[in-house]
Structures are given as structure tokens and as C-alpha cells.
Length: 350
Image (cartoon, rainbow, N blue to C red; front, side, top):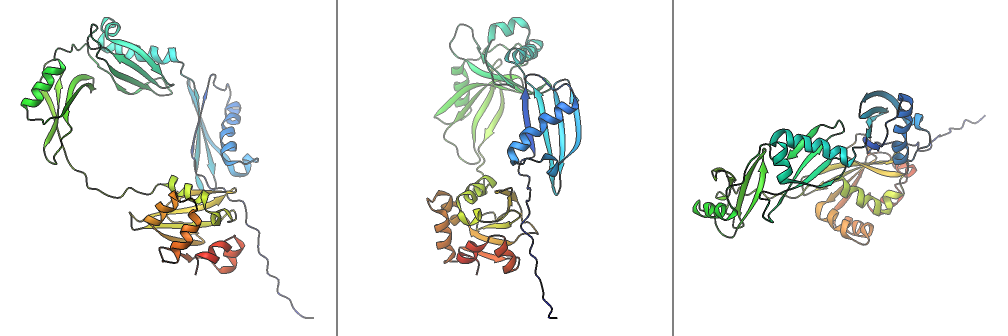
């Protein structure tokens, strides 16, 4: 009886690669129980990853609650954890009430009523119009930023009942005497809770002082701004740019789930990325993967030109003939063919 050798090749399996680890839902009313919170927390994850069986990929890890939010953490095999925040909405009146109280506690109610006017509230940021002089049209913007717990996380407001005694003209005159070059601009700014006239020149020479901050009450020069020319360097390639290009290139669309491509952008800051085909869509991550099927080396100018091209795939193929795009196989030809690298073999992989 003759013997036969059977070769079995498993079908590419579904692979989940986490590209978004933080989700947040703003709710008018918080869930009353842990079970309700868990059920609601699953919704944004299911929508984002387009999976129907939550428990197949995600495992509940931890849950905590404060008066204003639930925080739920899920673990994902071979991926970073996912955190979902369910936060109680801050209404406009509630937000302004908290922000008003902060300012009044520092300046007094009379000062607040005379100088501050509510302007807008965007869910976390309370913005005010500040009037230095009630009988003048000059005004500036100040703001207070809240967090989910209704605490002040950042602010740019005065923190004392400061009177603006120095005029803009006087601040400009002082700046000229201090040697600040024309053309000059001068505006009132809050810095560390106090108001200053910030007068700066558009004519800036490396190593020279180009601006001043003058106390708006005393006129004292509190700080000087010196122009330091930054070393010019190429802007780094971003993950979002890689994602944009991958979506437009057919050869990536042909890859099966679980395929992994390393991408090296040369002649820039030598950025490294890897692209995982996950649940039918590409996910881009920083750095190389040790499990990559191939590594593509692409010149920075070619990458940027492909982003702007009407036919990026054609451009990449043409530039590969000039060795500005090359590829190195990291797996066997049989394995690469099974995963859908046919077009890459045809056009780029030697």
C-alpha cells in the first residue's frame, strides 16, 4: 500500500488587534448597578470593532464607581487593556455654577459681577468674556476647565480682584524704551492668576529679546521673551498618515486577517510601524512586529507623494523599480501566498 503525505493548511483565523483603548460615553443618568454599567460599556467596543460575540475577545477585569462616573476595564488577549468611562453629563448651568464659585472665591462677588460675563459652555469648559474696564469696549477671553468629578483641572482666569491701571499705550511705550522693535502688538493676558500686558515684536532675531510681560497694575516688567530658533527637522510620519495610505492601496486590502506587515520609512526619522489586518480592516501600530510576514522599506518622499496621489498604488509600484520601495519576505512563499500577498509578490517582493 502506497503511503501518501497530506499537507494541511489552516485557514487564516480572525485576529483582533486593538487600535483604540479608551472609550467614553456621556450619560444624563448613570447606570444604577454594575451589571447595567457593564452592559452599556460593551456597546462602544462592539460598534468600534464590529464583533457580535463580545465574550470571545474581551474579558471583564475591573470596575469602579464615583458619584459622577463608572470606570470599566476589559482585558484583551495579546493586546493592551480597554477602558470605558461612563460619565454623568455636566449641564451648562451646573458647569457655570462651579466655575462662577471658583472665581468668586478668589476675587469676591462684586468684582465678578462687574468684570465677568458668561459666554459659552461646551460640556467641560466654561468660557467668559472679561471686561477690564466696564466703560470701554476692550475685552478678553478667560476660561475654566472641569473634569468628570466636577473639579477644576485647568484655568486661565484672574485669581485676585486686580485692577488694570496701566493702559495699552503705556505698555507699548515701556516696551519701546526697553528696546523691543517695531512692529509691536500688545494684549492683556492672564498668567498664573494675574493680568499682564504682553507686548511682542514681529521682528525676531535669534538670541534677542522680542517681547515683555508687564504687570497690568504696577507696570513692572515681570518677564522677557527671548527668541530661540529651534533646530529645523523633518516632521515625523504619523500613524494616521499610514492608516490613510493603507486604506487607499489595493494590495493591502487583499491581505487576510492575521497578516502583519512591517513598514520602515527611510530618510526621515526612520519611523517604524507595523500593520495588522484585524477583523477585515488594517490596524497601524508603532514599531516593528517580530511576527511580521514581510517588511516594506519606503523612501519618505515616496510615502508623502503617495498620500497626495490619485493612484498611490501605481506610484508605489513605479518607485519600486527605482528601488525607492523595496520589500523583504519574513515568511515562506507558501505562507505569504495563503495570506493574500499575491499582488505584493507580483509588483514589489523580489
